[in-house]
Image (cartoon, rainbow, N blue to C red; front, side, top):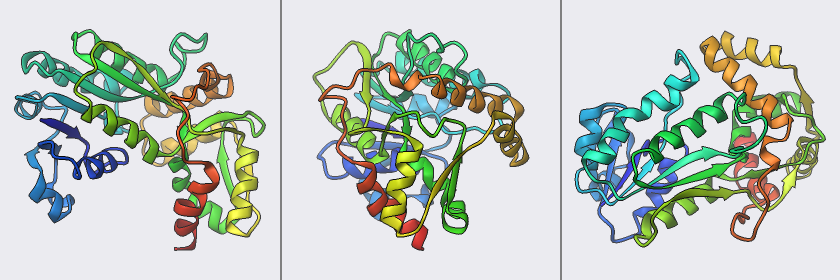
Length: 294
């Protein structure tokens, strides 16, 4: 039995779609089952509710061999720890009580770096990993840098202004990956019932690019000029809180971007195993361009 959390989310829906082609029994935890396609509801067992609820995860994890664990975004959380660690506590109880064998989770690069402690949302993700590992369950944390699909949040400014924005220097080259590649790695681990122990699995994409590099590629693919603009942390935080994000989570985002600008994503050495296939140019052709033209 494989359990998928957040099956309608950015990662979960892709993992679930990959698993549907297997012969494995699949169970999902979802607040609103109607958000699942009809053919998916026919194929999987549905446990309705929040995967932050102990009763829900205890039922869902009963008899489970593997769990794909994703903490859903909570822009209104009172603290980064509440958003990532506290949300995962009920699941960690259920991992132990239901004797789950393996867990695969979404995490971040940066463990062991000088800036880890003050890295905001990254620190929260790593603390969540530590909590899961403390249960003794076999665990693989998929450690990723920024993912290309985040740019879809800026489709409007790319389309109307020919610009996109972030806090990181336009010259800093960093790894970036497509969520489809992260989902593929997660799927492989969920279908492999032979591994044990605890560790991380970096997913770095095929190349390191700066935001200026990305702007050039986007310009070529879209056939129109696109420019990257670095913004100060104060401006990003003001924008986030104006949209309703709590002060703590907005500060966590700013602290994470400061850490990225200071190289937290560059410490992981690239290997053939950590190099995922989808290039930024391919992603722009297949994902960004249709979104901009829509």
